Length: 344
Image (cartoon, rainbow, N blue to C red):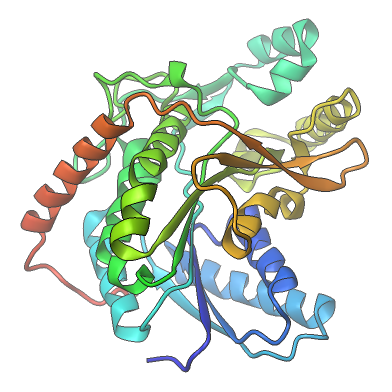
């Protein structure tokens, strides 16, 4: 067991948003707070890079901190239920309690960009083009090795199963912060395709499922386990996940369009990952409404602030029932399968 202090688990810590959640959490939590940050990644080299980056940030930007900062890590793949099972077991061995769990899942199935459509969208309606990029090409029908829809597994069921496995560590005041999206519209989800195997927009559908999953569980989590659940969206910001489809010109062209959108009045174009981390960290440290969706927003100058919106709850009971059934099935299937996650 580690020594006493706050414990924050950040999934997808090696992403731009995950890294900035760590930066912002350390900046805004009381400087005397002792804290352990648990970094998650699929590979050990990325873990080392992330820990180094967070340690450097703390040393350079937060010299006033008096509380100790420690690190741990999980090698976990949220599209692999055995990996999730083992990661949960590792956490239970090492910690008595988890204070903050940031579900920063961003599994996508992108095959590129339809550049002709992108140019048409930008010329027709710039704000919509850089807010709702329908010209991103997503693969349809991809499955995880466990036979679930890949995006559904990585963004919805995998994190939900992880929470199920570590619920005892979160009980007694722990907080779950689900990272949703500005694109989590009901039109992207069919209740005949909850696995998102037929959807041409599985990423957006997965974020709608996140909204519904939170809405259908936050009351019972608080009443039965004293766990606080929140759902937030980080707005639009630069993301590492799509860099492979952009070259020098298109990347900086995208940034210019983001700044133009913000100048024209868009409040969701945060651009900065640190600004995008505002709502996730606020949900961890402040008493926000659990029945609302909280957003990282910014003004024309880039100064961040919080926004709030209602969540359409239609179908949340069906989503929770489907996921709970999957949990039961996988608990039974994996009841005898535990292995160390630190074998490289």
